[in-house]
Length: 136
Image 1 (tube, rainbow, N blue to C red):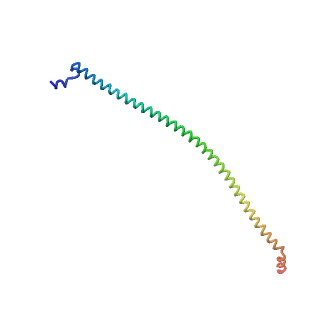
Image 2 (cartoon, rainbow, N blue to C red):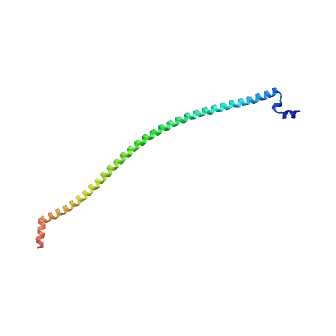
Image 3 (cartoon, rainbow, N blue to C red):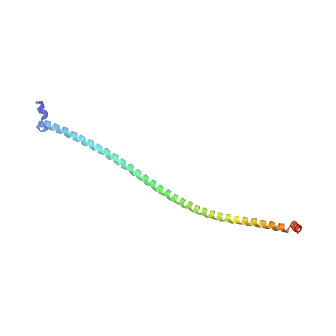
């Protein structure tokens, strides 16, 4: 008889037993739903926290982008100024090369004039005349 009782379906059980069984199943379902609601609530809370952290991180990132953009602008201006200074230095360097060439030319002319002056001075000196007479 016990084996027959085990094989009986819920429908074949007395109504009180069916009600108790259904109540137990319903309690399990309700408990599962409550756990699911708690889990969903926890996940929602975590999701909201993550969303707030993401918004905060996004705001900080936007601030950093603004800061970096400003720094980029400053660096671009400094690069522009350095390029202008570089151009000025190139112009000054070219001018110095030109002046150096002029000095070299003037030094060469000065050496030639000094040599001519020396020759003229020697030619005008009484000693030069003596040498000239002695040769004759």
